[in-house]
Amino acid sequence: MSDTRKTRVLIIGSGPAGYTAGVYAARAMLDPILVQGIEPGGQLTTTTEVENWPGDTEVQGPDLMTRMEAHATAMGCEVIGDIISEIDFSKRPFVCKSDSGTLYIADAVILATGARAKWLGLPSEEKFKGFGVSACATCDGFFYRGQEIVVIGGGNTAVEEALFLTNFASKVTLIHRRDELRAEAILQDRLFKNPKIEPLWFHTLEEVVGTDSPMGVEAVKVKNVKTDEITEIPCKGVFVAIGHAPANELVKDVLETHMGGYVVTKPDSTATSIPGVFAAGDLTDHIYRQAVTSAGMGCMAALEAERFLAEAE
Image 1: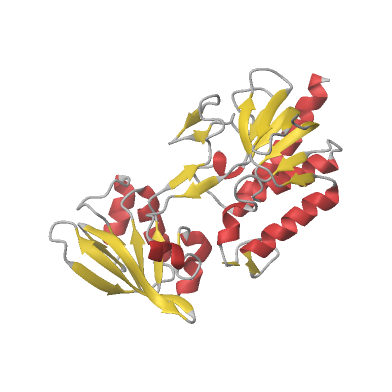
Image 2: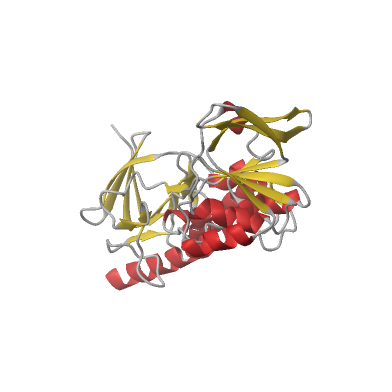
């Protein structure tokens, strides 16, 4: 027989949004339960140095998430290592089923499942993640001052990353499989006018080349899609910018979404299209995608959940 847990607020996800929601919901005496999900700690656990978290000149991503979890727990949030696999939002209280078989029954739900960067799936890409391969220029661009780097992609994300990286890099090579970009015209105009950026058309990334001791990127091998010729380009950083995908598998068929699957929230709010269900962090944020903005939305979601429950009673 499956275990059943009842809570006033169930938080699904354990990145900055989830843990911050846990802190605020616990301080509101809502006795929240937080279910961590498939990647406890979220995207920051795959990041090394973080230099843009307020109050820390530099902190390791996994260490920051460990501290956030400890903070939420200390405030009274119960953190559970489980994965929510099914959600029934058809009536309140909401019923959420987990991989462990536990049923979580909640008066309000805060969704903080985050988003995942899209990757190319290359073994060498996986090997050097966090050691020269990144999917976040605003997170890691600072480490490549005066270096040559490459950006992979042709949409808004790739062009924005390339432009941002010119603040640090001596040269940015934008590698794209076609000879035209999908990015907005104004972004393309800025890119083509920037002397630090050199587009490389009709090429795909084949392999990231680097050293094992210390771990680091030295070059990339790219293939011409027309001739199959392989070229090696020296670089110290590789930014894969082929977009992000919100982790919306649980709710994409029941909540309103837009912009490729991001959950829609009401203006200046974390409230979704279902009363009592709130969404925070990268699951709903297709613009900023920063730890600090996710944390802010986690705070908003907890405060709104508290208000919702008070009014319902």
